Image 1 (cartoon, rainbow, N blue to C red):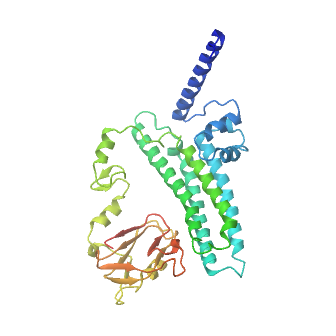
Image 2: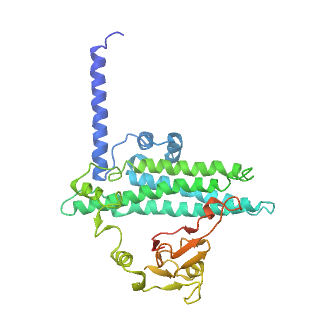
Image 3: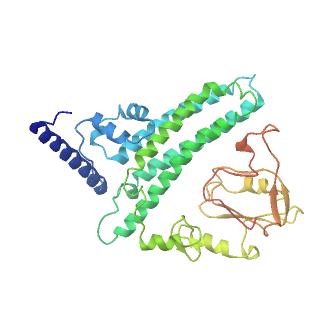
Length: 358
């Protein structure tokens, strides 16, 4: 190989220095919450899509975002998520149209209804993502005087939530398709499968971009995190009085109290001594979108039922008389015509739901 001419060597050194300076500027800009310099929208798209699993899809998603090279990364991710929401809406409309077909098999109909519910959950998770990224914690750099530690902690918690809901949004589509995993696989799946894969890939790209945000990547362990790692519930954050910090004081008191000392909002008893004889009836009667914990006390007994807690029934808590005393059991399975999604004995499709002594 012939030696590199002196002038070419100088150009090579200049290019290396320029790329290093651009990388440093980008890192500093991200840390400061400002926009790194990109000479064009194409250059910005290439930088944002670097590291995604589906770069061509990522580039096409970002292609029509106005002034892409002038936007901070949280705004870019929000724009990508908004485009994913549009695809989710179109996919939901498409799935609903198949329900109009009277020749549709019962299993296909059940699987499509699962898909519609899962698409609705995906939409909720995408909206939660944009809400997080548009919040002060989602836009702060975690730097500053006085409240720097609190700001950094809030940002990390927000980024953890973004990572969690986007990861869940990816898996929802595969849970939908699992509903068609029976003999012959149903005649609808081949038509809807490409779109569901498309949604998952769009969400995957948003997740990959979100991992570049300050606070999203795990940092070097500190004395505080090292101490937390030695606590029970490792991986759930700092502990306070034997519980993760994110467990609210009111919930902590409920979990520490004996069942007999908890003032229940509803009582379930097989012998009719409570307000309800089935858990499902008590759940159906619970208020929706509750701002406080709604406690359902389930007396000792074996309850043969499938309990579904819908997403509007938030802040529910089941309290039993103890392991082996209060038992909820059922036997739904795929062989008998149910989807995996519907086979759960207690199906929880909501936030802030907990069980105690069941």
